[in-house]
Length: 158
Ligand SMILES: [Zn+2]
Image 1 (cartoon, rainbow, N blue to C red):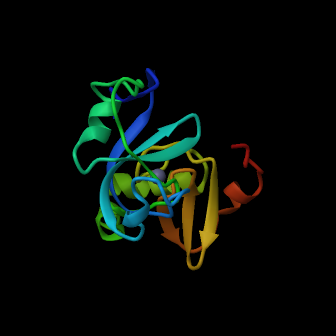
Image 2 (image 1 turned 90 degrees about the vertical axis):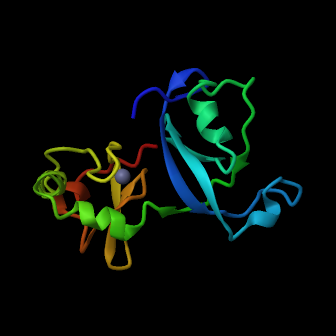
């Protein structure tokens, strides 16, 4: 993903669909949207992840044309909003390709630290229920356990 910016600096940004989380204040514009599904832009920069509403495409415009500068309007969504698309099935289908298997295997062995689903640098892995998730991007990596190569080092420095 090239050509997306926040505050004039390059950032990662992608189209997602989220379940809107809890607004920090009842007066927030999205307070009555809690629990509903919404198109959004997920922005990642300097280890921070946040969501811009994109129902009217303003989120995408802000990070492209607007270079994330204050003179372009945007509407933030709560940081605890949950990404529901791309779905697990959609991500799952990627797994069948040889390239994906290769990347997955390399990631397990920590030969690479790039998430094979979204390309974000993996800082840590977390097992929730039966599955392992990448942090900070939050992608579901695989069912099972955190590989030894990822347990040995404590890298939770974000
Ligand atoms: Zn990821």
